[in-house]
Length: 522
Ligand code: CA
Image (tube, rainbow, N blue to C red; front, top):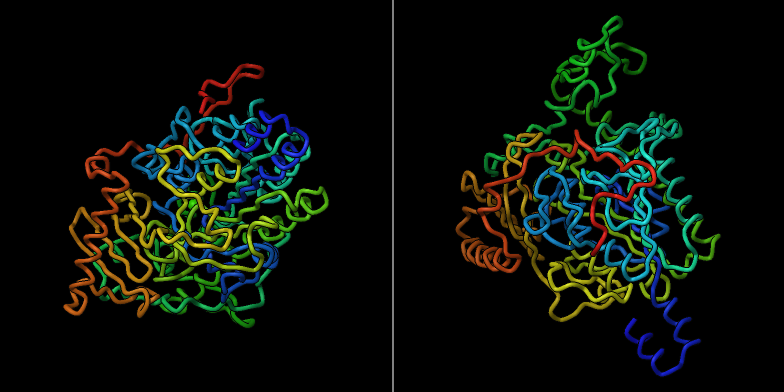
């Protein structure tokens, strides 16, 4: 922009305008909910193929160490929008996002971008900073979902992942063509209850999905938190998660109660014979039930990413559009015996992040520099030629995406998770991850874990009390303290959390024709 302004003052108008157009790329931010990188074949998945995401990776860059600063849905979304940690953006748990604060969409809108939010919003308050929005209320539904926009609420029949893609393509078709766009295309999939669409309902029926190497983790060297968490494949997936049919005749509250029960014995047909499964055989069966539905949801996401890439290709938008594919955090795919997220362990700390921008991002490349979800907003601003506000805590990934790594790039990251006990009886914790190690402090019980990520990438051996690691632990504690100061985190903040409420509550769109109540000013 500055170059453009200077050129205009020099009376040299025609060329700089054209140059400015190509210097301000469109930004298409595709984000799913709970899609772990290890369920993408471009990331070396052992359990599925994702041809369209692989296509994006082939034409762009894969980040191998992109981490979330608080591994849970609503807080990650707030961190992405604001470029700030939870204690700065006011969303440490499932509380409502204060839409009057500055964020990336407002900055881009003020800089002349057309801004649109389509799909899963999950921040409780009415979206601000978007010229157009159509979002799921709360968690939203997989089948025949309702949507909220400035005209109110409407149900759209079909499968959420297909519909959200349709709505995004509609937004692209109807956008003002004289502005660059910032479109957030955000899927509900593959969030729990992992409900596939009709097209993929029987995919994987006749195959056995490989089990993760840590499915039988016994937590032998860990602190209490792992044993206390109620998110195991074995003991916490319920009848609804496992898509077991309710007994005939059960209705109303009795049916609902049954759906939330955890089956500890299941009778199924195995090779033409009826068999009752318990113990280890039942856990293996539950894993297959769970992972197949999760992967069916991803197959639909992958197809729909392909539809979007095709649209860009056929509408002349390929060359000047940054396309990002990411997810709000990772997920346990049976790893450590779990489903869900929240912990600072690798499977859910890591976010998939694939980016394509022809002529800027080297195709088929990968980078291992530590990137964070708070970096996304500064990245978009730099690409749009908008100065990054000093209070954004992330750093633009543009040099990383160009295939370079500044000498002063971070070599460690700070993490903090707040829910305790939350939905899955998790323990709050904070910690540091370097390029080689991880230190976690479950502060309410003052319990520590330390992992050597080079020798023990699956994080199975807590070396916190191993004398051979005493110097490493001391150095990690010093780094943790430094990072905590750097991001200005305060323990007092974690002691007074706002109440959860976003899952069950949502905003009411203003009456038709009325302006939105929330501030759109950056
Ligand atoms: Ca999520």
